[in-house]
Length: 269
Image 1 (cartoon, rainbow, N blue to C red):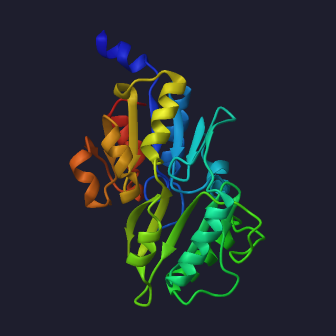
Image 2 (tube, rainbow, N blue to C red):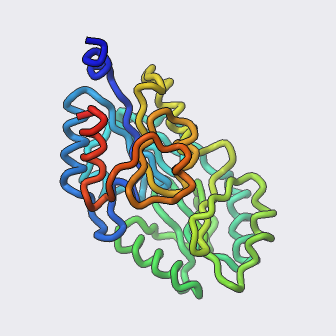
């Protein structure tokens, strides 16, 4: 009877996107995952997308996945129930200085904002950054203004480097940021005090849901803070080993219906 009562309690489910809901091999969300999330919501559970992506970079995802809220930009923007619960933007003058420092230290990448993404006007000398730029433009998330213009605000950074880049020098100038090493010369830079965990904490307080009834799903290093924070941590089959000490359940790969499998095995659906 106790188990049945627990299953009837509202659970809060937080899903990373890239490598968790969205296959990085196929570029698609498996139908099994979409159906599993729909079933969870039908049972009265709450579904949230908790991503390093900014809200403007979720256009296609929002069309495919039913969700009760979006926790974006590693906790810098939270939209639940159609209302903004939290929003943090880098002050305009600080943003201008950051761009100058990035250029001076020879890195390149994307400035991420609620509305979408900003890039340098000219092609990047770093091939992987140029590939990222093309992918974002193809998704419709690139904005009309360029990196070189100073008429906008942004929330976080995703930077690429090569052998000419002075990463240590730049990160020394970004003391007000958490630097997440994403591998292959890429770094996610998030204003200090923000993470996927801080976003979850605000949402749980908003809804009055306990950690016992909270489940997080992830695969990469920018999921580390939410894995450290949560009680029920579901690790995708293909994952960054940094998450392993905190995982409570390891599921299959995204392409092998990992989300649906985990949710069924854990009794969520």
